[in-house]
Length: 447
Image 1 (cartoon, one colour):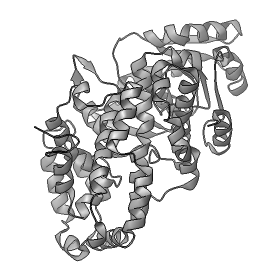
Image 2 (cartoon, rainbow, N blue to C red; image 1 turned 30 degrees about the vertical axis):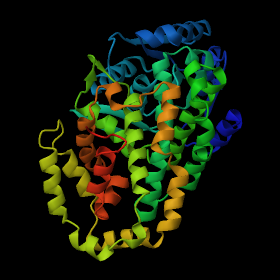
Image 3 (tube, rainbow, N blue to C red; image 1 turned 90 degrees about the vertical axis):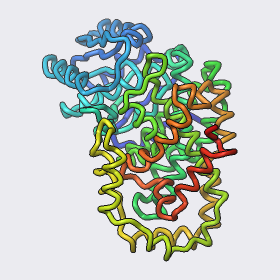
Image 4 (cartoon, rainbow, N blue to C red; image 1 turned 90 degrees about the horizontal axis):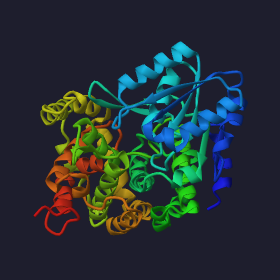
């Protein structure tokens, strides 16, 4: 895959990002890029203790040497998430200084600067320090407020600068997390195909073509990713950034996120820790990705060309029944009204469900083939994760298989976006799918 050409093609259709420099030894380009895209502005370098050492100090020094007025905003806490109070602190800094944020970091730093910059009606420069997330170039900022995980539509950075040497020097766990986040687009793409068939979120060709057609090539060298090979790291980061640009084009996270990400959201909202530490977004998504690959494996063994649509429609619950189910399930959840809110948005009436299931039934052989061409089997995905250094079993992030099973019901209701589990509910195969994945002989067999 030609990273440079893919990036140039993507920038032509990106709505927010106008400059993306990726290469070895390019960190020194920060002052020139800042002057070009933010002329006569003051900068505020936003970093944490680790990213300051990785790149922040060098960026700060080069900006000052270039005559750019600079302030610093350093987050001193050793462990922190994209929580609302940090957004407020950066808001206050931008209010006081009138500066442009220079986000030096990865997912959390970037999301905080993204939202604070959006609050001020301006963009920012992102200096990436790890190939760990796809959020650098996405237009959504994922933050937590009042216990809920929110994906707020904002604007992606105007400029992204990524020095491959800096990325390769990041902790291996962060790079493995990025690999898992990129691999998550495999089942997410298959679920987008389901939403497209249902007519709820049609596939946007421009967003799909930005990266999905090259995704296999971007994931082809997990050993190189684990070893920190510059070309493998560059390809991984390009893939993550291109998926973010796809989200810009779609004005939604649909191209890059579906049920596999919701497992991570459940863990975050329930403040899950393992060995006293929060687990990375990418590692949590890795388990969600494997779980969805397992669901698709079992789904493909079924023959939906024989589906009794009339029986499914007759059994379809009312909105009130689904709302009661959501309230009951989420009763002790940190955000008890979340399931109710989301099922209210995505519930369809019986006749709409009839149309949806009829489309599945009438198109089943061809549709199944398209889904299979998109989605990796569970064992293939697990082998790739093992080679990249990502988790291959929920126990590696401190989650039991019983706990993972209990999370499935929450993920089906956690977001209004149509997914495989929604199709399974409509087709009355949900319980069977879950039993196959977690039962005897299943991918996540519970002893």
